[in-house]
Length: 435
Image 1 (cartoon, rainbow, N blue to C red):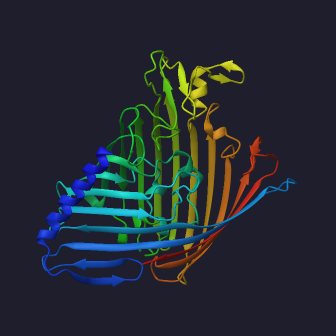
Image 2 (cartoon, helix red, strand yellow):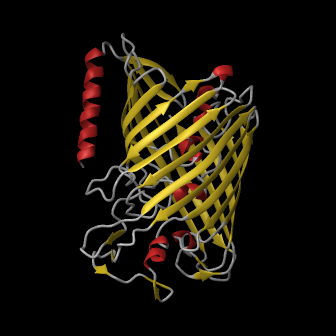
Image 3 (cartoon, helix red, strand yellow):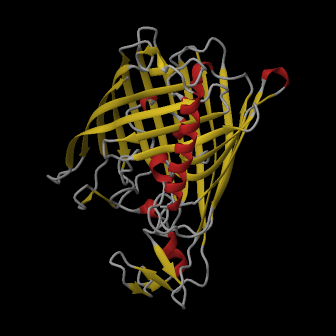
C-alpha cells in the first residue's frame, strides 16, 4: 500500500509540474485506432486511447463424457490508457486500467490496475521508470500490445511462466552501433510479487535483465511491440534477445501473486523458496510476414529449513507427502511452475487486410511441477490455426478467429474436474475496436 501511495504522489507531482507549464491545451489530432492527442502552446502532450474486445470461446473434449464441453461469452478486454510527456520529453507517464474483470492470461486473477508509472530520460539513450508495468523478463509475446495479437489468445507459454505486471524500478537503454545495428539492454528490480501488493510484501526482491540485439535497425512505427506486420516492413527487421531473472523468496507458483503459498521454519518464521527464469526469443518481420520464436525455462532453490506449510484456511501443517512419502523439496516443486516451453508462431498479412496465422507450443514439465496438474495443465502440445480481417489500415478494428488442438498427455481432467481420455479442441473468436 505504501508503494501505491508513493506512486500516486509521484504521478501527482509530475502531473502538477506539467499542468503548471500547460497553456491553452487543445485537441491536436485524432486518428482512428490511435486515440486522442492533446497538446498546448509549449508542446506538452497528453494522449487518451483504449480498446474493447468482446469474445466467445468453445471447448470440446473428444470423449463420451456428457460434461466435456464448455461455451463462454465475455468481455475479454476493456481498456483505457492515459499517457503523456513534457515538452522536452524528459518526463513521461502512463496510467492504464482494464474494466473487463478478466486477467491477461484469461485463467488467472483479474487486476483492474495494469500500468501506473513515471519515466524520466536520464540521457538520450537511457531512461528510468518507477511504478507498475510489464516486466522485461517475460517472454517477447508480453512485449506485444494486446490489441495487436496475431491469434485470439496468447500462447500457453505466457500463461505458464509470465508474471504480466510487476512493481519496481526499470532501466532501459537504446544504443546505435556502427553499421546501423542497435543494442537494447534492460534491467529491473521489483518486489517479486507481481502487481502492486495492497497487503504485506512476502519474500525478498526480484532482479532481472534482458539484452536485445537488432542487426537490421529499428522496426518502423513501433513494430517491435506489435505482432502483425501491418506496416509491411520494406527491409527485413529482426530482434533477438536473452533474459534472466531471480526471485528471492517466492510466495506463489511463479511470482504473480503475493502470499498465496507460504512456508515456515521450526520457529514459525516465513521461509520461502527462490525461483529463477531464463529465456531466449526473437521477432522477425518482412513485407507482411512475421515470425515469433520463444524458449523459456524455470528453476527453483528449496531451503532445507522449511518444516511447515500454511494451508488455504490459514492453519499450519507439517505434512509434505508426495505419493504417500514425506518429501518436502519435491512437494514444494509440485506447487511451482517448473519446466521449459517452446513457442513458435508465424503469419502473413495480405494486402487486402486478411491475415493467416499459426502457432505451435510445447510444454515440457519437470517431474515435480504444477505443470503436471491434470485440470489446468498436463497438456504438452498445442497447435493453433487462425485467421483475421483488418477493417482498418491500422489496428483500429479487426475480426479474429482461431482453432486450437490440444493433445492429451494422459491423466487430464475437464472443467468439471472429471477425468477424460480424449484430446481437446478450443475454438475462439473476438472483435477488436480501438479508439
